[in-house]
Amino acid sequence: MKILVTGTAGFIGFHLARRLLERGDEVIGVDNVNNYYDTRLKEARLEGLRDFQGFTEVRQDIADREAMAALFRLHQPQRVAHMAAQAGVRYSIENPNAYVDSNLVGFMNILEGCRHNRVEHLVYASSSSVYGANETMPFSVQDNVDHPVSLYAASKKANELMAHTYSHLYQLPTTGLRFFTVYGPWGRPDMAPFIFTRKILAGEPIDVFNFGHHKRDFTYIDDIVEGVVRTLDHVAQPNPHWSGLHPDAASSKGPYRLYNIGSNNPAELSRFIEIIEEKTGKTAEKNYLPMQPGDVPATYADVDSLIADVGYKPETSLEEGLGRFVDWYRAFYGV
Ligand SMILES: NC(=O)c1ccc[n+]([C@@H]2O[C@H](COP(=O)([O-])OP(=O)(O)OC[C@H]3O[C@@H](n4cnc5c(N)ncnc54)[C@H](O)[C@@H]3O)[C@@H](O)[C@H]2O)c1
Image (cartoon, rainbow, N blue to C red; front, side, top):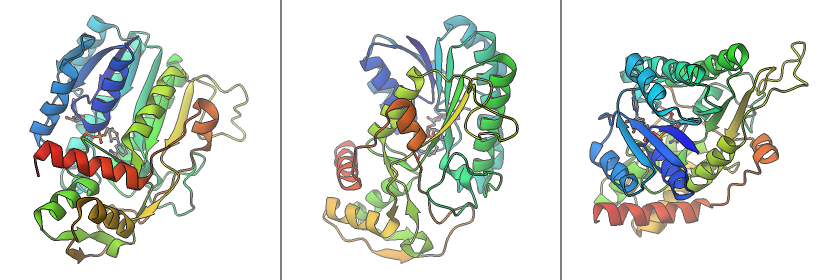
């Protein structure tokens, strides 16, 4: 298949593209390699994809309407896996406009490209952050998600709403995946696993927000990629039982689906730090702090519908996954 993957210089997009190329798909990879974090890491990921014959690299901004229309016209992808976005909850407090450009304008350009070029299936990255102020655990796709606590979360919820209108109006099959804290080799330098590992290895103190009581449904990258590939292969269908009288939140009369994708096994931040200490063989100096604006105290994914529909099964324990992350980090940075 010919698949457009956006965000291929990014953590998840890179792993996903590599997996699709390994199984023989053709991948058109789009990324603007912006400097939200170290571009050397992004370039190194891309370098790893260039070895594959089926990889076509396109360096452009998804918010550029004309360029995106031209890209779809030229390449005519059969399916689209949209991973590019301005990620990060805390940065959305500092630079909200970046989220409007990449996550709203960029998403719109993806939808238009899919619509005008009869793409068979659009799978896009949403986020556990849409659950915002919700406290009922585990988070279910049936929950009301009208109370985001960051603009990042609001932009992801907006993507789900925008996708629904395109599924409804143009019968564009769309599937949104709400990712829950993804970690693993080639991970993101702005996220806790990376920051903690870097600082612990360098002997620097770490900031532990919410006094270490945060709970996160940490999900290993290979489990995420397996779920995304299975979802991409499982084209969203209209739900014939959908009723406007009792609306199911995760499907529709149109070909629209929404799933959580997490490990379904949350861990406390303090346990997470303990494992990094074990894997690095060093003890962290901890600077305990209160919760940050935009943060939520806990996430926990109900993944039953993804199990039922595509046979998703997260397999990697936190101990195993963090071990692989620390090994990768030490090899990549030579520390
Ligand atoms: N990693 C997680 O834990 C997590 C959790 C929930 C949701 N997500 C979502 O999953 C997706 C992938 O996340 P990630 O962790 O790989 O992040 P990432 O920042 O590593 O990757 C995103 C990539 O998109 C690119 N990009 C951003 N704006 C762009 C633009 N306007 N034009 C072209 N390229 C652009 C960036 O350069 C980057 O390489 C994102 O949509 C993110 O919001 C990630």
